[in-house]
Structures are given as structure tokens and as C-alpha cells.
Length: 182
Image 1: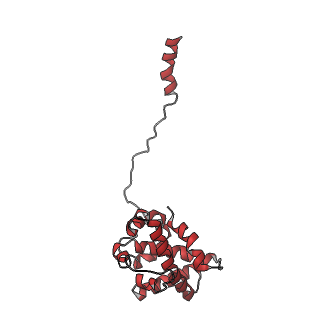
Image 2: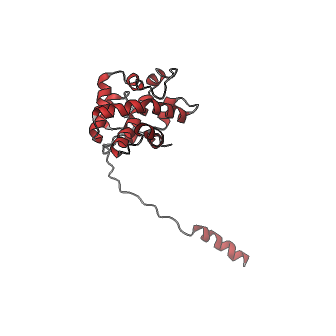
Image 3: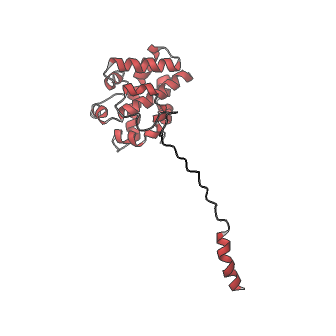
């Protein structure tokens, strides 16, 4: 399941309304990935699991990231990357957070949200920028190496072996049988 595509189809139109700015759409895509990674943390999610979060609860984002410096960094970095005003960035994020929360809960169904997000990490992890590791739970980005990162320093000097495919082995097995029939 591609969580980011789903949120882009369902949440972005509600947040952007008639604004079809590709920059703002891109900003929201990255925010959804960062937000999903944050909710994949059991401790973070459990703080809100029993809370009644309304779809227009713009303070929800402030409660998910209670650290002012982290909230500011998210808004500032996303605004800079997508050439959007920082104030607009904060507003978009605040509007998107509760809507995305409800959509993610709906997608998870009966599966606990952190488990669902961890099971589907591959669908959104590539959208998470490297700088976001400072605002996410420890180890969230460690699961997959960053693009261009070296995976291993091990070097093999053994030549690659290519196995020739045996062609016609089925026909070779049938020839003696056909011969016996005649």
C-alpha cells in the first residue's frame, strides 16, 4: 500500500482546496512521510490513541511535536525545500496533521497504527529527507541506507559465475519415449 499516494489523494485536496501549487503538494508529501514516521513510534502514538482528535484540530501538530524547535525546523526545512513561505508551511502542516492522522488510522483498520506504519515503512520512507532524522524517533531512518550511501565496504575479487541454462532438456527426455512408441 502506498500511504503517501493515498494521503496525497485524500488529504491534500482538503488542505489545499483550490490551490493546485505543485510546491505545496510536494511539501505535504514530505510532511506526510515525516508525520507517518513519527506516528510509527509506539510512545508517540500512544499519547494520542485514546484522545478524541477532531479533523480541524490545528493544535494537534503542536502536541505531536511538543518541542518548538523541532516544529520550527520542520516548517522551515519544508518551506525552503519547496519554495513556500514559512508561515504558509506552518499553516499547511497544522491543517494536514489531524486529517492525515484520521486517514492513517482508517488505513490501519484493526492493526495498531504503529505496527501498520512499520509494516509499510517502504511505502513512505523514501519521501523522508535526511535532515528529518533530528525530529524523528531514534533509529527510524536507520532501517534503510540513504540514497547514495555505501552499504558495505566488503569487496569481492571472485569473478562472476554465469550458469548456462540447459535448453531443450524436456525435449531430450521425450525423444527416447517417442522412439519407443514408434
